[in-house]
Image: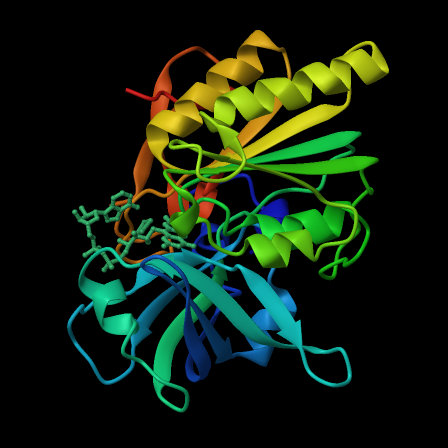
Length: 300
Ligand SMILES: Cc1cc2nc3c(=O)[nH]c(=O)nc-3n(C[C@H](O)[C@H](O)[C@H](O)COP(=O)(O)OP(=O)(O)OC[C@H]3O[C@@H](n4cnc5c(N)ncnc54)[C@H](O)[C@@H]3O)c2cc1C
Ligand code: FES
């Protein structure tokens, strides 16, 4: 998206004009955790444009049920044998109309995909990046971790962080998806927790986050230079926003608001965001988000 050269949020620059709309061949579609699948499809033009935290809209080609696409985060970008971005991975939880059908899609079938969409995470000088994920909310963080660890640059400059930590919580270990991928990212500190204690810390991801913040403060004397990014169920993101306020650490949340068009036209995805004068206004999550400053979100 070319949002840098326009201040008018209703201008066409905000309508995802630079995104690609294409039919993409499915390369594989495999179950990676309980009710959770990873689908890989070939989309080199889209893959070359993707930045961490952006998403795609996806539907199954030649099917009109569901009629409209669904938003999924870009989980990973895989290159061809020359290192050029070629395939995109999305990891999805089986939930409703699209995802229950998507599990039956096999290699060689086609998807209608448009993207990359949304603002994604903007690069910012950060000493310690703490990524906090709940449920299926880990999906935007693989590429972000690689970028902040200086392992990939996704076509833009991003100052490397000294440390990157993932705090990832799920109800039980069967629901943890993509942990192998995160553990394969060199230098990434992965902290797992589950509500029932079946893997990692027995408790909430906010407890793990506070532990990481405590360790950071003990080591550095303050949490200066720490930044939290968060994605997951809304109550969990609100709780993480509360922790960030208490600890006076910047926090961005990636919202998973239901969407219809994904490109700024229908206004189904609006969320209440605080303005500078203290009032709130609706912002479209698909084009002005999905990443927002956590302190600006009106949660209720
Ligand atoms: C930017 C963005 C990125 C996302 N990334 C991922 C991802 O990587 N993996 C993933 O599994 N999901 C992701 N989601 C959520 C996903 O788009 C929804 O779960 C989607 O509705 C599933 O489609 P479906 O047709 O299977 O379910 P639907 O038939 O659309 O919905 C099933 C049920 O879920 C409710 N619902 C729909 N959308 C949402 C939502 N966003 N939050 C809470 N409830 C909802 C509906 O009201 C309904 O009750 C993302 C959402 C956004 C906005
Ligand atoms: S989904 Fe249509 S405006 Fe955001």
